Length: 176
Image (cartoon, rainbow, N blue to C red; front, side, top):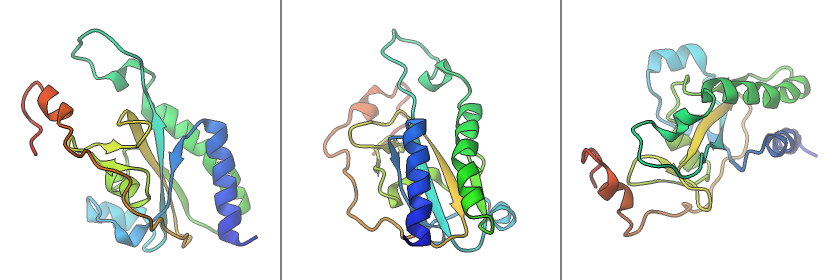
């Protein structure tokens, strides 16, 4: 078993235990970065990004002006704790590797990383849409200096002629 296979096996086991339905790998160098000065300080110069999707479907509800993701516990805390549980066995198995977990705190464009890693596609609403799961997911990521093989498959879908999000937008802020 290669080091990469061992790394991915540990991650897969942890992701299954945490109920994470989708994750993938993309090359860190393939991504644009936000706040380049922060990227230089936080991220390795080369390596891999492993985006993870955390579903937060909260059920159907009557009309409200409160975002559905705000109905549950603060996802920064939930995802942060989950990332730490995923990172612990990886850090033990790969003590020399840089292994960083991020939830809305990295200079990495999360949707771009998730699309490049094969999780889904960018919808007309700008959000990640994962076939079979939808757009109600939080994207967090593990960044490592390890050169893991990136996803190189075809794009996973698109919105086609669907315009539901555009038509439902109450302010008309979404356009396509």
